[in-house]
Length: 50
Image (cartoon, one colour):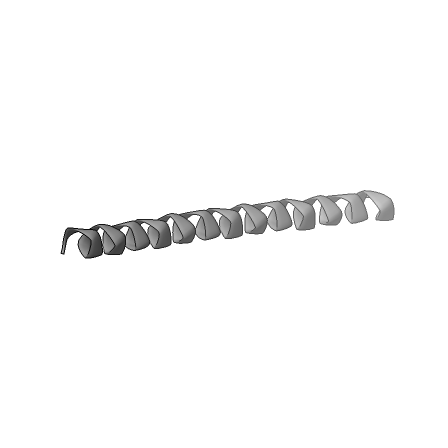
């Protein structure tokens, strides 16, 4: 393989890994915020009932 072809493959692999990492971080932040919002709503409802 040519040197530029190896570089292109390496760059593609690094880019794919970065995209996967970004998706994992985004999903984690989304579900963490959703969980926090549900906890706040539950606390609000508990306090408003009393």
